[in-house]
Image (cartoon, rainbow, N blue to C red; front, side, top):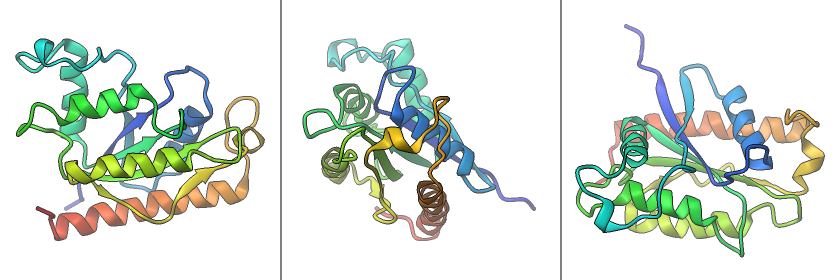
Length: 191
């Protein structure tokens, strides 16, 4: 009997159509191991979280987003760094997935994190802040290997293809480790 494919919901923190972090996500899709499928859970259409509009599952974009998160075996966060943190749109998406209290669709999910920046920070501070947000949601973050892409423009071609062989190997390693992490957590569920 064939095992069910592992489904990963990808949350891309950049809303730009052409961005370094979207290209990094595309590389993760390309380099994911057999038996793992990445599907983008789009965050751009989510309204600002507001309890007043979170009735009957929320507005249509929130319902679709929550269904994608609920149906995923794991989450891949791909984030730029804005003001030493994650973009507001990504935090808003986490709020939609984590509320209402007691009915969170994100609680306890396995997660991996990566990010790219044109400069030397490589989204390191944003990733650290994101991991702080994981704590109250019991998100089971994969710690290693880390993907912190510095000077990212040098690592992609003009069409967004990841051409840096070292980074391709790192992304591949993280995707394989993430698959193993999810399988381990299925054998030993966290509470």
